[in-house]
Length: 386
Image (cartoon, rainbow, N blue to C red; front, side):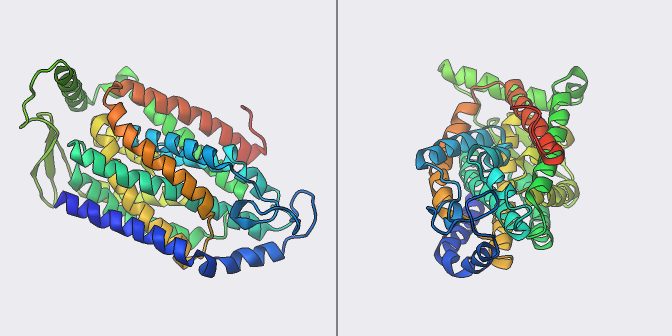
């Protein structure tokens, strides 16, 4: 049953991606062409030179990204998302906004053509979600095979997230300029960094005895396996014990956990709404929700959040592109998806050798850096750090 569900979601994601590739020229050329036509011609900032070489989304003079950089950045995004179940969407956004220069390019049209500024902002949001969607699909399949995905919990988060992932694109597409987007992007990331930093303190760890016990059992099992010792198969991995309307229980390496389905349903709605607004997968919010609220060990959080992200990405991409006609650059996305595929396979394999505390600390350091950088850039107009 679990594999059939993942197969269904995988087919749905591939269908959305394939369909947008096929109909992109017909469905999205109109809004983009109209925005280009309304932009002053010239060679200065905020202008378009019709004689310039086509770049991002075929816009004359737009940024051009060398294909190898797209693949390498995709590997990084896929690895970090599939390792910690979060931050992949943030890194995708950092790549599109800063590394590839799309943010600075969109910003030049803030005064000359606000409509193009907002259209490019929406395109960045959708582009981020394509990368996270593929990584979430691969990660979900990999973690399920490794016994590190809590299917009932992931489904509750996903079901709650469908409405949020649909409403936000409908309500905000074409209305968010780049500065506003970057500012809120940074606020959310910086806030999450504070939550995870607290979790690494003694006070934050005090209420997570079950999660720590499960993590230690998992780490000990991997040490024993590397030493050539056999492990108890009946205790290994996630084992669902009971389903109910008010309580679902499962074990991970012999340690029992349980949750009321209503909370992940509500949490999934809120997280999907916030992440759809920012244009990322939401793993950076699912992770603290699952570790802090649900008290789960990091080793099963990544896979569980990946399933929830997968469903919300399918919903959000479909809404942005088919209902709001937001264009994307499939040449750039195609190269990045190659890297995503590679990184998403490497993540689950390598993460089991990295202690849980170091995974969290890595996330905290990256989140603090990105948060400070983008909050200052969005609201002050410049970044106070490189």
